Image 1 (cartoon, rainbow, N blue to C red):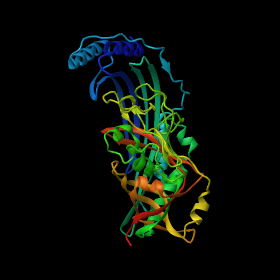
Image 2 (tube, rainbow, N blue to C red; image 1 turned 135 degrees about the vertical axis):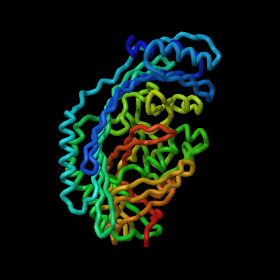
Image 3 (tube, one colour; image 1 turned 30 degrees about the vertical axis):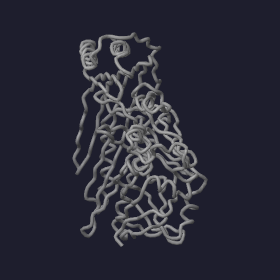
Image 4 (cartoon, rainbow, N blue to C red; image 1 turned 90 degrees about the vertical axis):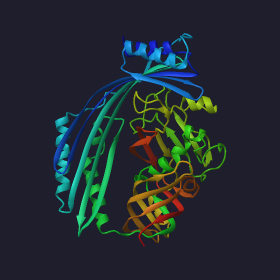
Length: 452
């Protein structure tokens, strides 16, 4: 029995047991190579296969997962019927299965990837200041078959590739670091589109520059967040609060504000999983819904939320194709895909020159966010003073402290240079790949935490 036939059989077995039902089958594999402290670590992941059956009744979720075979399927259907105290009801009429056609992406032989990492390691080690180098190359393939009680049956092939590099430097007993990652839903062509050695040069320069950086000033000031800083703040401080399950549970500052002005008129916030090759790109979400361009905020006005099938049904909202899950053991929840601010009209130099005294952020670090009220604290990995419209000396130890919705309201200028970053997003114990993007922003009156 093919996986498509198994999906249809599973749907027929659980159809009508509740208000909503779906089936998810996954076959995935991956491999990674890592060099740390001049040692090579090779980790090859075995094949992962599984099937998840979900029935939702009211707000209760009933979930069964096991091996994708007919015997386990019969056990799962029986377990769900017993849990719901129901026999077989209804009959599903499945539509013609849909499959996304993907271009065959490039896969370089693993020995060549290992050779590349050793050459990158050698590049970093040429500097006497370097004390530690960590290089990692990860690639995986996930093939999924999905069906739901609307009769939709789809399959999708997802390829993920990531190259990350980190370095620690030391001078006079002081340690600083640099880190960068590239990748997305693509093949090994990522290392041809972006020269890894240019990336390594930037990482090393960032770390060495931090050794001579001044302590960051503290206070309220204008902050320029460059496009290359990554969309971390937009994703963490704003995006999660627009996921419908958080809104529905009254855990979001954006609850009940559709149609209201929640940001500067310069701000238009988009989520779009249909964009090709980015961190959160998908052919279908994990409930079988095609992704689309979803306008969350348009010229400062809140337009909607990110939904899965359950939140769409319970909240009477449009279905946006954002039901995502980490794997077959998990049931889907509303998640971001590729979330970004639309670019504006200003050049980078024009934005910087408009600031008399402030801070330029070229790279964001980690931090903490409260999705209920939008308050956040983020580290700045690479920052510079702005003095009389000019980029000044580098600073270290800077923190950005504020509130996501307030930051959006305080956006004064938006650049033309939309740049995407890749990453993994965690929520409710599940981790999925995402893309974050933003152009250069000028944010007025942001609190900067520093050492002086």
